[in-house]
Image (cartoon, rainbow, N blue to C red; front, side, top):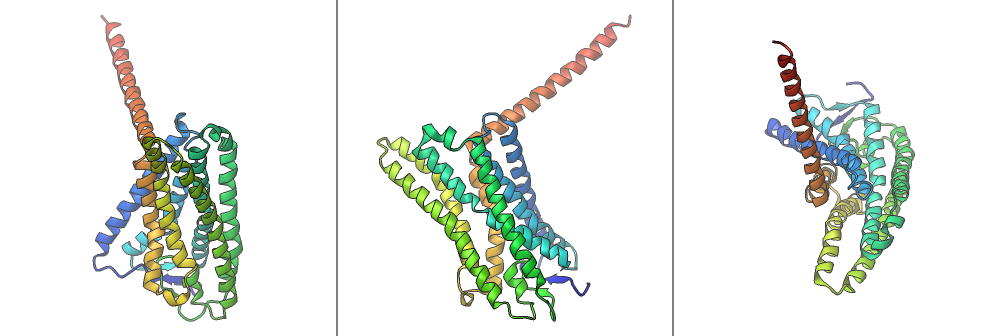
Length: 322
């Protein structure tokens, strides 16, 4: 272990590391493979693109999210050493901040739901492919600016004494506790930045869903109301869970925090949130399920045609010889 390396203490000390490794690895493989399949389906299926373009970007974010922390956690469970290099820690912080800032994207999905329910005839114009691309690029740009601003400052503090980070990845609050200097001013500025980052998307989401509820209340037919509520309820559940965890992490005073609680909450929205998004947005989505069946049907049909072609070629070869 080099003097600049850090030691990750992990989520907890498991009595059966092999069992924990198997469970976490299964979650990781399932989430990543399903998200990748969802992105590819939406990309190649003309009936899903561009209507589900925002969903594909959410799946892409979830894939990167879970890849930031889980592979290192699996390595630490499998091997004895839990060290992470200075650059590796900085990379984790940067990607984590970028994705956290990019979760403004959830507010954009709320706006998409608002347009779909309140202005369905104008949806192709208000949510055109160009508009969706600008939303996605703005979300990624805002998140990356957050990472570029905070990561260099965090890693510029001198770290001395114990290099043990009481966490399973390099999260800023846990890392700053190792600093030899006073970081209170930086932590106050970061707190204000996080509050602002939460207020903007939460405001967009709140206004969108208030307008949706008003529009649904005016719908005469019960079936129409149920369909509109079903369209929004899944997203509202994800938003409530994610921003609830973000509120605990970034807004609650330090008196309400303990290292173990912080690690559990971080594990929730870095590992379990992608799985929750997977269950709500992908596996329960009828259009995505139909697209998967169409893709599998085309694959099976092409395999049968290829097999018939090989059989016909073999028969023609044999028939040409007396």
